[in-house]
Image (cartoon, rainbow, N blue to C red; front, top):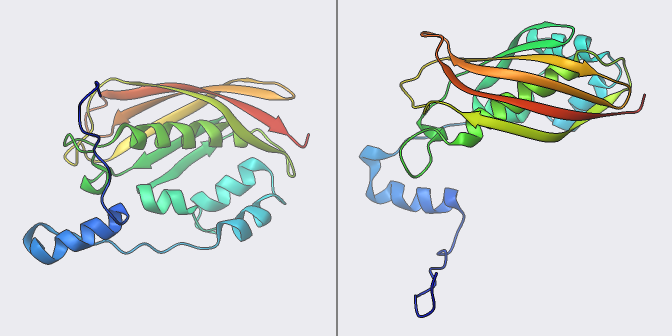
Length: 190
């Protein structure tokens, strides 16, 4: 802001608290959602005893609970093989930003999840990874009307300490590209 302009400060309360306050005066426009998840630390500890492909495969098969981010963002892995992961998601209005479309963070989260899991499928038990970098390119807007989306990631390089992968996010009904990206992951514990 330039000199002399007023500075705007956030009001009291979290975004959830502000939305709850609006619900009382705007019940016709109010939506609610209940989320259920399991302890992610406990699940991760159990997963560390398995290879990456076994662990993510157990999530796909429903033998292990999904991570809380998958519940919150309505996404999940649906197909796996070593060096490849296919995720699906269902973007909705709960993912909207202030300009009336799904926030770019939704696409980035799907890309990051699929890219990381593709790398994870290449790791033996007891070996972990973390994202070092994510590059996302947004091609088309995503709205609540886009419907189911698919994100396919493939490992391009898997070294001893680093891996790179690429992914494409498409609309399931039309096949149109919505976003694409690349990630670099650090491998540790090997």
